[in-house]
Length: 305
Image (cartoon, rainbow, N blue to C red; front, side, top):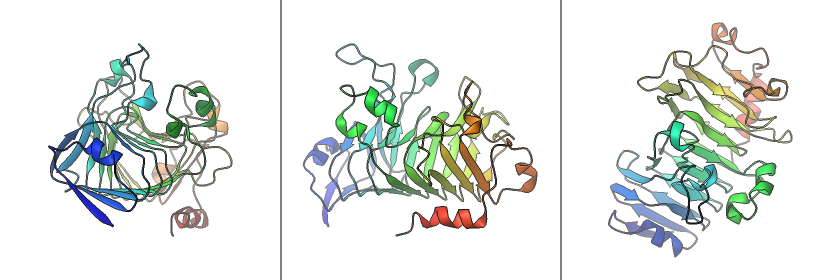
């Protein structure tokens, strides 16, 4: 694999334009303020540590482009992975627009590719921090001519986040990908609206894996009230999320899960837990079942090569 070394004084977006397959891009310590798109498969981007190498930008949903159109959630990313077999290691991707109550959604990372992996990375924003593609089918159709074709790509997409830090306020892990969050810290930060949701899955009924949180810690920052954050709410009817052996801070609402406003998605959403203390499980919503050991093993096996 060819190594390309990049320093903060270089333009990383220009390096990515000319990168070829089987390339490792090594980022030195520092801040890279630019918007990135990774379009080449089989590429690794490796930093000097998630607290040392930061890729950062500040687009937001209510920002207008040169044609006067709002950016919309799906154009706000700081980094977009638009190819297969891409790996991030030892870096942080951040959107520092802030004030989502006024500016709307602010995506740090968008993944519209299969076999993406992030190891020892950070992903930081507020509302809609990490989008795990693909888009729901109705949005793929709706955004024809508005979003780039790569962002409207459909099909199966499997992704893994290993020992990562993900921070946000509302729906800050969302999408339709089959995704493993393995031993990650999922941190809710303060939002003026006073409540939040960690995950917003939108899987189709045919998807049997969904989001899998394995051994994750759900933590919170200053100003986040006790019992004010839900683990997940379904962005589409059959959104699926499983929580295996996770640790929950005092900020997590006893009910655990929300049905999404005035919908009837409590009848269709697929949210479950394994290894949660029985006293906690007793307060969960009745439509969230416990996983069997067999189901737990099957979910995790789906991510083993």
